[in-house]
Amino acid sequence: MNWTDSGGRDLADFAFSYAPAKIILGGEHAVVYGETALALAIDQGIRLGVTRSAQLDGPVLRSVGWSILGEVRPGPNGAGPKVLREALAKLVELMGSGVRELLFTVDTHLPFGCGLGSSAALSVALIRSIHRFWQLDLPPAKEQGLAFELERIFHGNPSGVDHTVISSGGMICYRKTHESSFIERVNPKQQLKFAVGLAGAHVGTSRAVTLLKERVRRHPDVYGGIFSSIGHVAREMKHCVEQEKLAGLGELMDVNQGFLNALGLSTPKIEALCSIARERGALGAKLTGAGCGGAVIALVDSDPQMIVDAFMAAGYSAFAVASENIL
Ligand code: MEV
Image 1 (cartoon, rainbow, N blue to C red):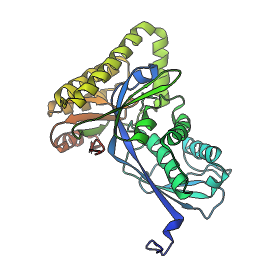
Image 2: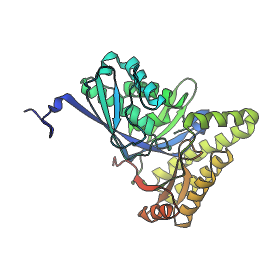
Image 3: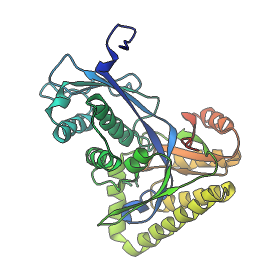
Image 4: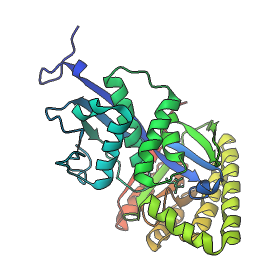
């Protein structure tokens, strides 16, 4: 039987993929310095459709969700944001010139560049869609290797936590040394629920990492102590998750936020969002991802909507998310 879409096109000419976004519960930035981070995939992400393009100077990337994206094309008649053009060019380099004939359509409500892993989700979704379209095997290690190459375009020299948790799904403890990376699956007994508030555009992950590196160079022992404390917090968080100690997890999120503030990664808007969340009964609140703007997550043990409403009443964009349900 041949499946067709509403326009009568043969669906064998299409492939679809999905990759979730992510939240870092604890350990962002410290993970760049070899410490543990605790990260989870969430119930929102990026859907991607791929088909053959009428133009041969692609690949072309279009969006039905991201108005900032417009149409992205890397070739000589290139269009769209530079980093996305470079990512598409890298995709051609990694997967061959056949990619030039492809048209990708992104469908998502995820805000771009706010610490929820939009670039890593896009990287994983692109790689998955091409492999499905060409009916190629994609073992997890290959997916993660290819996604890391794209993430390097987006973020310079990332730790790899974002694309790893997005590719693996669920929740993981992640640590990276010069030689290798260590991934330990974490098994939460319950779904975690969060209110997310957006504290404005962030400066970009690689910029935030670079600025912090300059501060670390000035006082390596001081910052080294903070990183190792953050690593400790992330490992304690894992125990709280496994033992269903949500109040303890929230408390540790507040501790982690204090350290992130000390590292110079918080802003008045981030602190305001954390205060609003705590006043309205959140178990804990912190920035997630690169900081200096971007998303604040507030952990709740009931309906997150009350805190989402409070964020919005204070003038912030906000929405609710939950851990990807893999139980
Ligand atoms: C960004 O989501 C997480 C950071 O720790 C950077 C990285 O791990 O590469 C800030």
